[in-house]
Amino acid sequence: MDSPDVVVVGSGPNGMSAAVTMARAGLSVRVYERNPTIGGGARTMELTLPGFWHDICSAVHPMALASGFFRSFELEKRIDLVVPELSYGHPLDGGRAGLAWHDLDRTADDLGVDGRAWDGFFRPLVERAHEVAQFSGSNILQVPRHPLTIARMGMRILEQGSPAWNLRFRGEEAPAMLTGVNAHAIRRMPSLSTAAAGIVLAVHGHARGWPVPIGGSQAIIDAMADDLRAHGGEIVTDTEITSLAELPPARAVILDTSAKALGQIARDVLPDRYLKALDRFSYGNAIAKVDYALSAPVPWANEHLRTTGTLHLGGSRAELAASEAEVAAGRHPASPYVLVSQPSAFDPSRAPEGKHVLWAYTHVPAGSTVDCREAITAQIERFAPGFRDTILASASQNAVEVELHNPNYVGGDIAAGEPSIRQLIARPTLSTDPWRTPTDGIYLCSSSTPPGPGVHGLAGYYAARSALRHEFGMTPPNLRRT
Image (cartoon, rainbow, N blue to C red):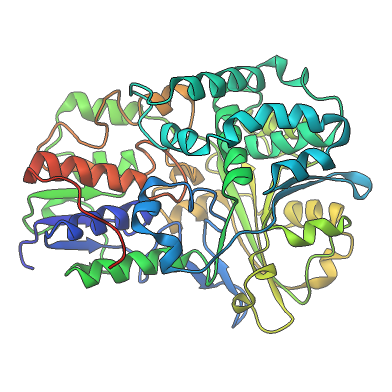
């Protein structure tokens, strides 16, 4: 393919979903990837010791069973996904924990005094989870297909995104649990955007669960790569693209890059007004990450936590809000929020027999060079006494190193653009077709476009659909496994 129909730059989940969609439409497709291996934020590698397989960025996938692209692609038929009975857990001091079971009834029963309030908050949305997924997984600039569900979700976002967030619950576990998922947005709390992110994630936790892919996140990428090659696509690795001039002629170029990188790569062909809009697109705060090789499972003080794929650490709602406020102010919290995943509790292939891997990150100011290994370890030890004794090896990345690994994460921002309400509406610009640039044939498909961060493939799918319509006069193809 000296002159493929379509060139895709970047092999993350969105780049691969765009490539698969175009190849399924019968077009010739070539993907370029700067790294030796494909996957972007969904790669799995040996980072600590031989035989210990760690997820580079994403580990647990709340959107894997909710994404419209993955449902059409029939991902669950292509790879093995384990859905833990306990979607996520939130340890508190004294061995207590908030437990968000896949089963909403069981969650409410466990919450005691707040059980009825939790059930009333989530049940109307969980029963309509497909409608929540459709809206949250699309461009916000749309006529809602399910206005009543969106209104219900909007009222809950207003409540939990404002000082009224403390009025619903009386105990400590329920508000801590909800704050833990809200904190995924890496922003000051309460805010509308953190509440929106947390509510959507929690709904998926009760509706479809938060699955762990057997073999690591790489399994998702490999499934798409297999399908791409089966339909004539080509992947070129170890090739960094810094200018459109480095690409072969193609009718459509789809970039799975940050908005910042789009402005650099295509600067010679994009109009000044659009380039200025890309320059105004802002990036949020960052993560610092540690991967552990362990001699044994994490000795959580609350034994239920040994059976979940995901944990949110940091204590009470007030503690978490204070921690995130410190990050927003440009400081490193003394007692940070820590997001933990323990995939080897469900996937023995991830570590040698009897051993385990642990994935953890904390939030830090953008561009931080601080090694957070000790801060993360101490927070885990707080809720799992004896954790230090299980550590065989660890690998740490500060925020700058996170960006060096993946330039889409500007300053260490894994969302590829601050997920504020303004930038969820205008991502990266205000448009009903934000994946299409003003220059014919040039498209953006990363998390810098709707629906934003997460492993869902939707941004790539939407960009491909737009390119099919505008460049080739074609409709989206069937993506089902054949």
